[in-house]
Amino acid sequence: DQQVKQNSPSLSVQEGRISILNCDYTNSMFDYFLWYKKYPAEGPTFLISISSIKDKNEDGRFTVFLNKSAKHLSLHIVPSQPGDSAVYFCAASAGISGTYKYIFGTGTRLKVLA
Amino acid sequence: SAVISQKPSRDICQRGTSLTIQCQVDSQVTMMFWYRQQPGQSLTLIATANQGSEATYESGFVIDKFPISRPNLTFSTLTVSNMSPEDSSIYLCSAGTPDTEAFFGQGTRLTVV
Image 1 (cartoon, each protein chain N blue to C red):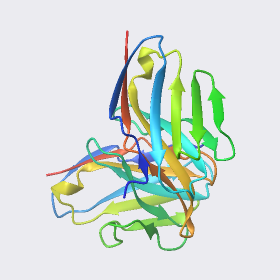
Image 2 (cartoon, rainbow over the protein chains, first blue to last red):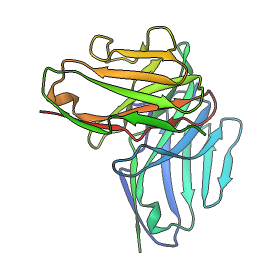
Image 3 (spheres, chains in turn cyan, purple):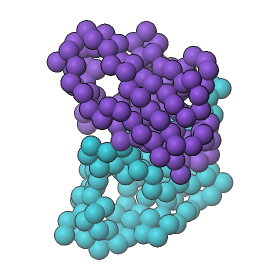
Image 4 (spheres, chains in turn purple, green):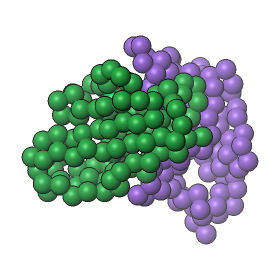
């Protein structure tokens, strides 16, 4: 049972344009959502997060939108840069069954074309 | 933020042997986790490492195969026991506190031959 899903395994965007990465979740107990970027041979790097009490959080070129009714979040990167090319994972967290845990989506490989 | 040091960064092991991966965090954190990332797959949570008590394992993972220790707030180990080629994966240590971001080590790339 995949509780956090990223339905697009890959995305290609021209440099300077907007990249939009999407994520859906099924468990309504999730109350904190995060995006990570991962380069090969490195651990995931935290990008941006959002609490369930908000619907938008912005940090520089990165904006995360949360639609709780649709159980959907998205990451917007604008303008996209070649250095943004990486695998992006969304994650959701909550206290579940007495423990706090982070559950990750399947990842989207973003390629920004120069 | 927390800096997480994980070692070894990679290893090639014979089937049937065991490997212990170490994870050190530079600050006291409430939670430590172990994940596995198989080729082309997502990060799958193996277990939550609990200080001074048995780890909490996710469905499909058992203590006999993946014993975990956490003797204090900043250190944890994961052992991959009686390895088979199917255990070839990247193993990642993570640490964090509730309602904040979790930080990751650089991962251990394990190849079982």
